[in-house]
Length: 318
Image 1: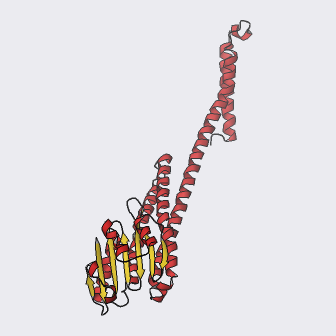
Image 2: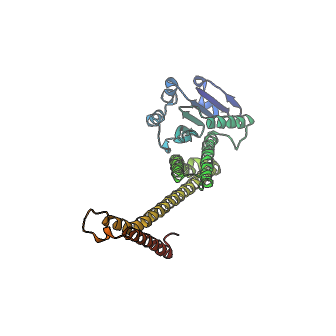
Image 3: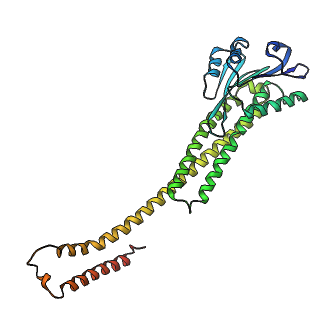
């Protein structure tokens, strides 16, 4: 589907002009949105707009890294939306010039729809500051970046829940949840950091500064910086939780090994005595002693009890 928004030179908004009737020189600026286009509609990038073949190729061969390329009077931008379910990136492409914005995305995105409604509303009101192709591009970027926050907040809620359950859940379950959160944060970071680097280039672009929208794009860049800091803080928190759980598990293992070692040490001399008198030799004097059995048992109890008392005094049972 292709939708168009055209603003005349006397600030009148015209919506839904057929592309074959759209004469760019007759309007102050236009926005053409390729919303989940088919093959025939995608071909218009080359046949109607005559965009550079490399830029068209980047549109049709997804998924490209966020970037900014210059083609004469045209800027080509690759942006990433975020799928809230899979946390995967969804590509959104811009062809931006002073009087034209062409957006291209292979699937419908609510963020672009919201931006379309906002820009259309401002165009109908003929607001001079919040108007133009550059402002339309900013609006889409702002909506795309705003959509990152709910996904990150959901991860932070899961992280807080894990912290609250740390005293109840088994360590194995907690470790599994922590590693799942780290994987989600890594996916989110792969989208946010390249977008942050792209917005840095956009903020320092002469085109943005020339058209007076520097403050708008700087605001989006600040949001991405905040997102990056939040992601890094959450990754450090998951690392601390992971290290704490590993230390806790190691401490439990050490206590178990200490207990087993103490038990084994106590029974070693008892096993030695039992082994000696369990040998089948005929000429062992103690075997025919009337009180030999009781004496050996008493010796074994005394030896075991003495070792337990000695270990207690050394603090091995603490």
